[in-house]
Length: 128
Image 1 (spheres, rainbow, N blue to C red):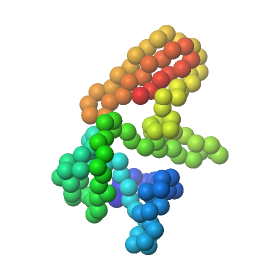
Image 2: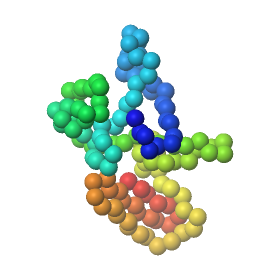
Image 3: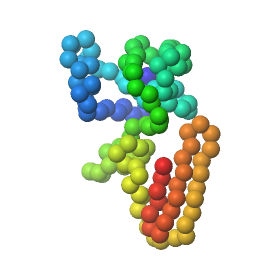
């Protein structure tokens, strides 16, 4: 699935839909993705998903709701009895990242397909 990744991640079902997918016993495990290949934006349309992901997906869960905003899931790693955010997204933003000291207001921006912005204020950094 991810041959160059030395780590395995897992999540528990957190919506009724996840529970329903396992209810009939057809699957022991599911590999779920946010709907994109590495370094590409998240697919938001059923037809586009069938086209762009056909070589890597065995099954598609289709929807009839328009996706207005692409949003990855957060990824964390257990470390020393706590957690280390690897990717801050749903559930962690827009909560600011505390800075060790106050500084000037700074706006930082990224580029390419998966960009981000960061705005600092005093001892807080607001990362998109």
